[in-house]
Length: 420
Image: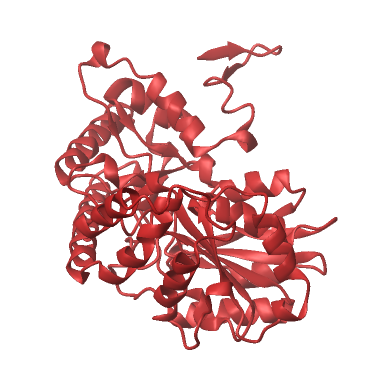
């Protein structure tokens, strides 16, 4: 793991993670962490609190309606061919109707484009705003795919901070300072990954008003849409589409617990028809002509999934997420060297700060996570992967028993490495 530099000091390389922190991806670093574990040496099963895939645990599962809808569409033999590049008409219509439920205006099917998961929607959004010399504002901490996609599109990235003491709200004064005439958009992730925040109506309105003053649009990442179980209900950013144009990105993945189905959407919230008066719509349509969307039979299942899923299914999921988030937040309080500044209100993850003054032989979040994996077979995501060095992200979309065991091991690990 360690290597000697030319001046004789020791560098903790961890397979190059520290040397190239800008190239870190969540999946990449989690793969390295898992590969570093020798379970036969410590005799403990691996518990991952790193990847946000709740379907890995039997207590989180999709609804029967979703499964039956996919089976029926496949067995019908009507959806074995190519879908239109923007998505099946009935799928676009169903997504428009689903999102319209929470908006003060009506979306049209033409406002909706079906994507292969939210990741493809992110790539489309950044491709649409890219131009020579342009920059985009993204949150820190945030989802690293935005920075990666921006680099491929030659978009300059500028980070604005989320303030933990204010429930991870956007530092809007920093946004105004960062923006210039080359700024094209700002990204808002709500409910938040990695922080577990859910923004209030008032804060989202201030974000929209700030974007209007700066003459930029808002890219609203709502892949965790409706997964809110705290004091703030989920409010879609599209509610404020009359103030400034909003590109809404979402998917079935989290709310229906089917990340592997890769069914997402890219939606124009533009009731003032600003996009309609430009060539942007035609540009988007042409771009989708070169993309491959999700499987046609999955698309065909969407109308029934969106219209017939029982509210009880959603309530059970939220109840379980509330339970596991409470466990996580309360147990973190018992561990001296870490702290969580804000109790999660939604999503499936939270951020925890490491106090290195209380640790005798660990000096950064990368080392913390690799040693924890090696000694306790517990996987956490180093904060540097989401833009916040010396923090860690914990995923609480885990069955309660496994979560309790993992947090027990985390406590033992911290006690082992603490100053006595």
